[in-house]
Amino acid sequence: MGFQALPGFRDFEPEAMAVRRWVESSWHEASRRAGYQEWDGPPLESLELFTAKSGAEIAEQLYAFTDKGGRAVTLRGEMTPTLARLVAARAGGLPKPIKWYCVPQFFRYERQQRGRLREFYQWNVDVVGTGEASADAEVIAVAVEGLRILGLEPDDVVVRLSDRRLLRRMLRSIDVGADEEADVMACIDRLERDAKAVPRLEEQLGRARAQQVLGWCEDASLAEADEIAPVLEACEDFGIGDYVRFDFRIVRGLAYYTGPVWEIFDRAGKLRSVAGGGRYDDLVAGFGGPDLQAVGFGMGDVVLTELLRERGKLPPPPSRVEVFVVPIGAEMLRPARQVLRRLRDRRVRADGPYAPLRVGRGLKAADQAGAARAVLVGPSEWAEGSVRIRDLRSGEERVVPIDELE
RNA sequence: GUGGGUGUAGCUCAGGUGGUUAGAGCGCCAGGUUGUGGCCCUGGAGGUCGGGGGUUCGAGUCCCCUCACUCACCCCA
Image 1: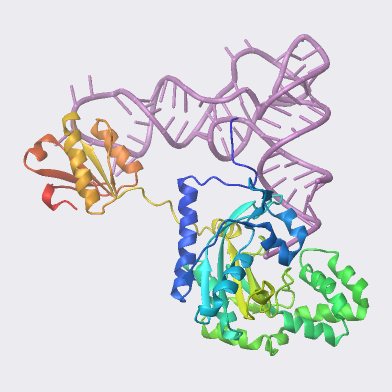
Image 2 (image 1 turned 90 degrees about the vertical axis):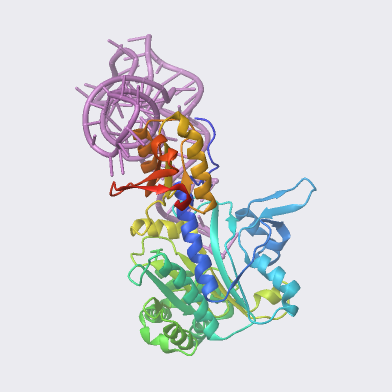
């Protein structure tokens, strides 16, 4: 059987690579359109950077090991600690708001399943240094723009938005204390996918209060709450109203969210979330940096690509070259190389055979390379300083002087 | 880490209750002759049937172990 990629790791053969680049290019495009600058950090970090905020247990989920210098290190499993580190070190000199994005590869030591591997690429977009709802809406709009560029529309995906402050306020109104809050939130978070969540909620809160919580999950009027309305309003302005919907059940697992939280799902609800984000105003300070508010999101390539495939949105494989040069006879091999060189100088993607071959095979190779045109370099035309250009689709041919070839 | 399902050529899959040199389609390569492709015809390469062990005269087919994939749990930064 030989060697194969480690579990949860992927090979990218040209076809898969083209898809990855296509997805990534939409991420770059959407980021740049909104004025975000790309940045990156090291793929290997000190383990402590990750355990400092998340606790030692996080090491179980990380590709952590001891390096040859005896340092406890880990492949990065997320970007937030690195971002916090950079911002903590440099924020003083940077104009606010800081609008940064990155497309790093992450590693997580977890059992793989659909939509979840041990290695993946994730688009991260963050705004640091403002608490305005307009920033929350903008990062959502940027995420949606990335999806839109890929051809995903409101009937393909939905942004479900809630707010930690609203959630906390509502729970306080039925006397859920700070100590029970985390457990109750965890229940709400899993109401959809876990049948046992409702009984557990009733166990924690009693039947009456649990019913109230379930009622909020169906209550659309909560979208008018002070915590939610400004974000929704700004989303309307940014033209993504059709994509965004208030949903009380969105909690997000992370403890560090402090305001709006949201996740993007496929409309069919068959896949894991495509993206998730929210406001984390205390995190930068928590990493020893200045007190800066922040908002951002992450979008992984794995679920997104599955969704695109399922919806039939993947683009056809790109052609390898535009032009294929076919020498007619062995003595035309050298002229064919010179033609290739001329084309490539003119930034035309062009290819040709290394060894003599029959014209029929040459045209077949041209077809397989995805070329739109074949350049036939034959003795009679070459003697007059010309080549024959064949349109591979229509079959039309014309003789063109080499000097005019481009 | 726990449990269920699956594992035959590059891809998609056939291979009743164990029986001779394991098959098909697609793809790939080469011919159908030397200046014209996509169709068609012919041929070829490619598999230690995920791996190891066991039962048997004989295992792709049965049993055990292991690895991988997959679904769920866990977790989801």
